[in-house]
Amino acid sequence: MTPSTAWTPRNRILATLAGDTTDRPPISFWGHVYDRESTAADLVSHTLERWQRHRWDWVKLNPRKHYHVEPWGVRYDYSRVPEGKPFVSHYPVHTIGDWDAIEEKPFDGGALGEQLEAVRALRAALPADVPLLQTVFTPIAILAEMTEPPESLRDALATEGPRIKRALEAVTRTYERYVEAIMRAGADGIYLATVDWGSRSFLTPDILRTWSRPYDLRLLEAAGRSPYHMLHVCQRDALVFEFADYPVGSFSWDSTSPENPTLADGLERLKGAVVGGLGHETDLQGGADVALAAYRRAYAQTRGRRWMCAPGCSMPPSTPDATLAALRDEAERTHASV
Image 1 (cartoon, rainbow, N blue to C red):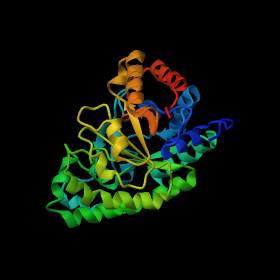
Image 2: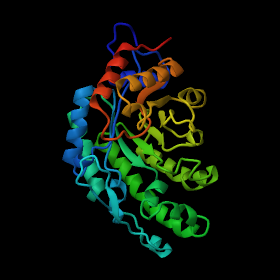
Image 3: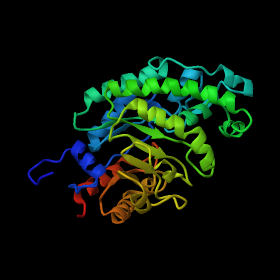
Image 4: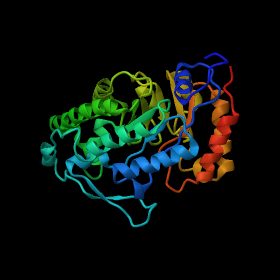
């Protein structure tokens, strides 16, 4: 970039991914709005309202948690309280034999078709220079949501490997076609999330490499090369560096958790950009002053280079809008160090 060139969200992010100096770090926040996520229209409208209020540098579509397993019959019931989390009311796998009924599903029907509609509508509404990401979960994480508790799938891997692998193939084939369609619908990249299946507290690195990695990479290959793909490693004890060679442009995790690598650790061991710096259940819930202090700590760790400011994970609906506005203002006041 030359001094006479205007910064846009898109070229600001691309420069950050490349490690170049920018006018300021890119910033974006996202979270559930439980009473406005059950249709494509509601999801797009509340996402667009938040973007119009804060003008985030990129938009991550944040669908309802369970959209990705609805094709296999998983159902959640919603509380009458707007900020109340939904709870599972039906799931298909109750016995080991039930895994045999998990088959490939249409990539463009039902909940998946609804999300494609949301991507198309949001892409049409956003300016072209604002990158759009769609949330997709890793195939093993999707499979685990088909039973309760998810640990039952993990524990079955050692004894029912062939049966589980056949079901995992069905999920992966469905999502290979879906992520291709996401990109055709106008998304700039996918936000690939691990849920529990990226935490040392839940699984070993060997399980991750056998049961997650090959299928994750198939989804990324199907999505096609893009600098905007983002890998999100959930939970504490995050095995972030197990994913270091994934073909993504950035890595997201809760760097504020004491059990997780810091942003500085990530800059040393990861290519592209590190994403996060604000604890979604801590910093963002403590008022603007607490959140701004967290922003400044993250900036100090990274000097504003190769860092995209964001929540450590999806932020709760109760996150004060005034806190988000203060963070957006702070980002405008900070400049990356050479």
